[in-house]
Image 1: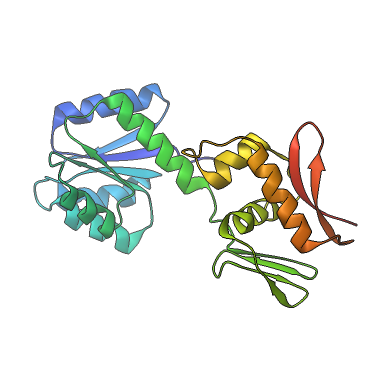
Image 2: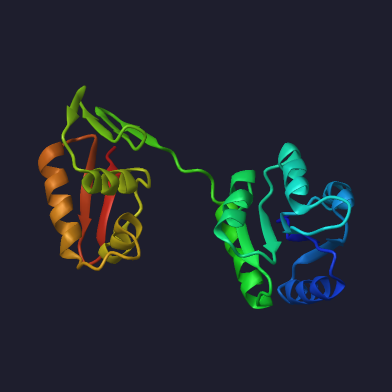
Length: 226
């Protein structure tokens, strides 16, 4: 069964009540703690999927609690703080926080951030290298090796090939590929994808074992034959 338990650590009873109310509306189970020196005990007792952690706490501050949590677990942690300066945020992220919300905050935004962090943490780490007969594509070294020889391929061509090859058999539209490979801020048209696919095919040539296929009216996929 999916873990939907959230531990909220804050010494302000009003804030705890508001967060708890909004989370329960979204069908989360909620545990609370008001002291930093009791936080680890509360964490072990509740075994949450995510921790919302205030910086200013009695007994032990949030930074010290975060260090303790990171010694025990990689559970996602969202920090709450009244300080909004960049140095504070960087400090929290360096200690292992997954996100950072500045008080006063909108409870709906906090819930949205909690859901977003949980979605990210649920996605397994993607491979950085994929291999097929005669073909190796690596994002670690940004290289494409075809039959033992390195193929000269610009970063976007390589990233497009890797994206499709690492999701072998799945069809993606041109718009999805623009979004996933070029990013949300890329303002181009779908012909950009077609041009890159054409160049990739020219460099890889025709193969019996695998191919970069056009799915007419939809988009492209990388397919292993046989």
